[in-house]
Amino acid sequence: MSDLTALPVTALQAALASGETSAVEVTRAHLDRIAAVDGDLGAYLHVDADAALARAGEIDASGTAGTGLAGIPVALKDVFVTEGVPTTSGSRILEGWRPPYSATVAGRLHDAGTVLLGKTNMDEFAMGSSTENSAYRVTRNPWDRDRIPGGSSGGSSAAVAGHLAPFALGTDTGGSIRQPAAVTGLVGHKPTYGSVSRYGLIAFSSSLDQAGPMARTVMDAALLHEAIGGHDPRDSTSIDAPVPTVVEAARRGAAGDLSGLRVGVVRELGGEGARDGYDAGVLERFAEAVALLEAAGAEVREVSCPAFDLALPAYYLIAPSEASSNLARFEGMRFGIRVGDDGSRDIDEVMALTREQGFGPEVKRRIILGTYALSAGYYDAYYGQAQKVRTLITRDFSAAFDAVDVLVSPTSPTVAWPIGARVDDPLAMYAADLCTLPASLAGVPAISVPCGLSEGLPVGLQVMAPALSDDRCYRVAAAVESAQGAPLADRLAERAA
Amino acid sequence: MNTPAPGDEPTATTAAHPALGRQDIAHLARLARLAVTDEELDRFAGQLGAVLDAVAQVQRADAGDVVPTTHAVPLTNVLRDDVVTPSLPRDVVLAGAPAADEDRFRVPRILGEEE
Image (tube, rainbow over all chains, first blue to last red; front, side):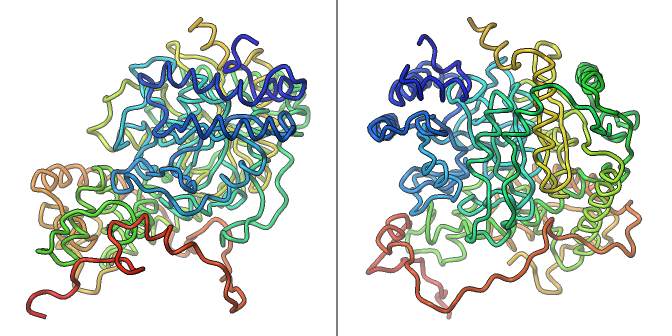
């Protein structure tokens, strides 16, 4: 087999099951590609080739390769703690830390027989939309290496789009799976909040953080989703409900028939009521994707969700507020680095110095903003009001889902921008999440599926569904993918060849 | 430490038009146990002012009687039986600490000279 790194997971499963290849060969092919291109791409923060090959050897010896996901390599965003494997969340403050336990999703992937290739780069503590806030290195977009790969799961998106992993896990707080997937031509799904365990996921904003799959095809994402989903008694926010049948939904969607499906175009997100800030090419691809849905038999109408206009300010109050609380645990006493402990300073000074040197600028900005929003004089005006907006957004979703089965919008208002273009302008950076924030605040599932190119760069279509109806996202995404012919990711491979 | 006591709030007097200057940033950073450099104070004062202006838009919402949503799923307190279960291995946990001594985390002195 010539290029194992170019195959989708479904093809790797077949090749492993038939004995045409082995888990060791598949793993080695990916490690070779990482060694060849990741010096420039910067997708990974940690790769342990020996451990990966040893694990692949175990799977081959067990005779299970090709059964389910056994023998398939996977990459994990560095926000997931992994026992004995360095985990930093993209921050200096955790440099050198090796966790004493593993996240539930990492454990489930291990139990499924996957082979961990490594930990991928990310914006520090998942705060960012470009992966430029990583304390360690810049990650580049495989479509154009002078551009960002999205964020905060930009290491995962670059790894999968660049064929350095067949699929990967990311996390999405305000759009950090969907936006990087969109700008690198991948499928990325934010599951219903609470339907995938957050145990062992280094918390940014606890009421919003959600792990989910990133892959080159809808079916590959569905396979990863089913492997990680389901109730976890160790996570008090975990929903005790069956995992949606997303693999079956992807299969159904690929048949291309959406007859009877009611699709709502969100007026405030890329529809007639959209504000400035959208690339013309993104809106054109979006309109074409909507036409594809109609051609597949869906009934399309415009739906208004007026509170969505306030999702961005509400998010940038709620998330920093929760972050300021969650990140209080990083003070240099029990794990991570410690700064200034030379015997002359007391504990408060050491904590403050450790946090000063351990955190990067975006994390500091958000901690200060969150501390402000939660402070006694401003709590009601900012944090309290933002939580009320969250209720209004949830009501808009409920009303919309009375009228339609799914909502659609562009995933990101723009294509990937040049590295460095927005680093000094937090508001411009935050605007990248304009379309993804409402689903995060309401906890409903949303998927991004490629819908073509603008300026030679990928554009994503976002499909949102009611809570626990993740299968609808996969069905519609698979129909869009199928209508376009080969997955967009294949075009990158053709261009590189 | 992120919910300061009354009297700890920043110096601006109206929530609708906050002024966030260097002193306010320094005060908030202190509440968050975050040392900041002079250069950071200058940079954050400008940036956070702009961000605050933007996020203050939430006050546009007509949300007087609206019940706030703190979480997307209803949360119930989770209690477990009062039985001893295995915990993480002490040695492994302490191996990840910046400093440890006799099976404990070693921390800098907590009381100042005068205390």
